[in-house]
Amino acid sequence: QYKLLKEWKLAKETIEEHYGILAEHFYKGNVTLKALFYLTKAGDKAKKTYANHDAISYYTKSLELFEKAPDELENHYNSLVEIYQNRGKVMELIGKYKDAQDDYKLYLNLSKKLGDQIMEVKATEALGIIHRLQSRYDRSLAYFCKAKQLAEEEKLSLELASNLNNIGVV
Image (cartoon, rainbow, N blue to C red):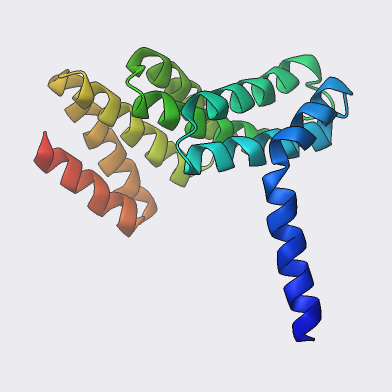
C-alpha cells in the first residue's frame, strides 16, 4: 500500500508540473472542458508561485473559453466566478488596480446572479480593498459596510470579522 501511495503522490506531482502544457494543448485543440480545467489549474499554480503574468494569461484564456463556448460551459459558472476572483487578486497584487476592480465587479455580479452569498460578501469586500489601495476611503468604507451587512444577514462570522477589521483600518 505504501508503494501505491508513493506512486500516486509522484504521479500527482508530475502532472502538476505539466498543467501549463496540458492547458495549452487542450486550449489549442478546442477541447473546452479539459482546457478549462487545466487552464484554471495552471493559473492557480502560477498564482501560488507568483508567476503573475503567467497566471493572468491562463485565467484570461479560461475566460475566453466562456466567450467561445457558452453553451458547453453553462454549468460551470462557479468556475467563472473563481476565475474572476483569482485574476482580480493577481491584478491587485501587481498594482493593476483598475483591471482588478473590473474583475471584482464581474465577480460580484456573477455571485449575485448565482445567489452565492459568501462569494457576494467576498467580492464586495474585494472591491473595498481595491478602493482602499487607491486611497478612495469613502468608497472603500461603503463597500466594507455593505459586505458587513451582508455577512450579518447571512450569519457569516468569518466574513463579518474580516469586514469589521477592514472598517477599522479605513
